[in-house]
Amino acid sequence: MFLEDCKTHFDTECLYELLGVKKDCDGKELKKGYYRQSMRWHPDKSNLGEEEKQTYTTKFQLLNKAYQILSDDERRKIYDETGSVDDEELNEDVLKAWRKIFKKVTKEDIDNFMKTYQGSREQKDELIMHYNKCKGDISKIQEYAIGYESIEDLKAAVDSLIEDGEIEKTKKYETSTTEKKMIAYKRKAEKEASEAENLTNSDADLMALIRGRQKEREEKNDSFLDALAAKYAPSSSKKAKRQ
Image (cartoon, rainbow, N blue to C red; front, side, top):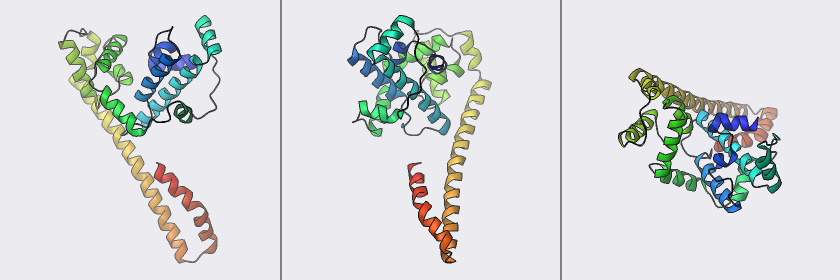
């Protein structure tokens, strides 16, 4: 199940490839690879929509489990010899586990890492890898490539690689980037963004309604309802701030 999920979300079942390291890497190199990959897919990145955040969270969890397996000598030996892993669920919170390893990393560090990654040679090489694996299908490439603000930006990056002779234009790329298809991708993205915004607005409206009703209850001096408001309103407020 775990390896199948890796294949689905990263297009590979190789845990070393997942973490961007060689099979004979030592513990230091393994940790460095995990750090780089987890920074790319950290769910605390700024400006992530709800659906995108869920994707990042799933990939982040898979990276964490891959590291937990390979950083354990016995489990790594079993994986190297058999290619199999246990599908036991990790009980510890993934973000807490990550922070135990990289305690000094802040949300600002995560965003700065992405700024450095965007436009880098590393980003281009990974785009080439995704392009070849997906045979040029941009609808699939966008599921794996990160650091591009829109499907148009992704296409521009691919076109640049084609112009520079680093990749060849495939039939699949041509059929997946027609004007009609690009408009459809853009509309889908706009729809998802709108749904995310509406969800946020709905949450805000709900909180306003709750506060309004709490105020009405206070004005009516309803002691029972006032007690409930006093008990539950603080925790709801804190939850809203975290969101």
